[in-house]
Amino acid sequence: MREIFLAFFLLCPLLASGFDFVIVKYRSGDWYNASDGVKNFLAELAQRTTVDTVPLPVELPLDDDRIFEHSFLFLNGHVPVLLDEKEKANLKKFILNGGFLFANDDYGLDESFRKLIAELFPGYPFEQVSFAHPLYHSFYHFDKGLPKIHEHDGGTPEGWGLFIDGRLAVFYAYNADIADGWDYPEVHNDPVEKREAAFRMGVNIVIYSLTY
Image 1: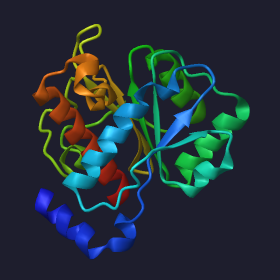
Image 2: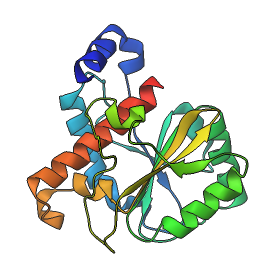
Image 3: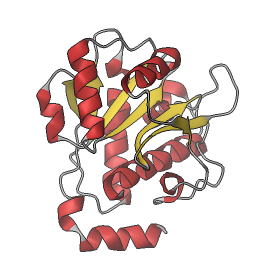
């Protein structure tokens, strides 16, 4: 599978050029706390794949219409995410127009994020993503689904998805904290294998967002 996607990107330069990673800014929380980790991840993405990766993330609030110039948003934080009506409307429009949102619970985001998804998309399924789903196999294979990077309260990591007409439009990493695994080694003292799993999972998420 990995070789198939490498060949795919070599043959499709337009799809692979200029991928930019947009970090969502929101007023209620520490949206910025994964910024260094995202930079590390983007360097890994560029090294491991043929995706022409913009090396620095873009940081935009959801009430900025420039989000519609992009296809990938990243939402992260430790505290509840609270959005105003303009931000909610833009996020809903972004997703319904084909955009992809990766949300990472950095411990504290869960309840507010689930409420937000339920409010914006009451008629669409938000459910655990099957281990057989292409996201878990788009570049690396994760036969057991989402890897657990940080313990927090313990428990099993869960990958949740919002499906729009069969398309996985929102991927939510719960009880895993993928983005913390992208940080500098000395920040969390994660073992090499944990950081590797986090980078690999991130690669899968991006590759999936670009190809489905």
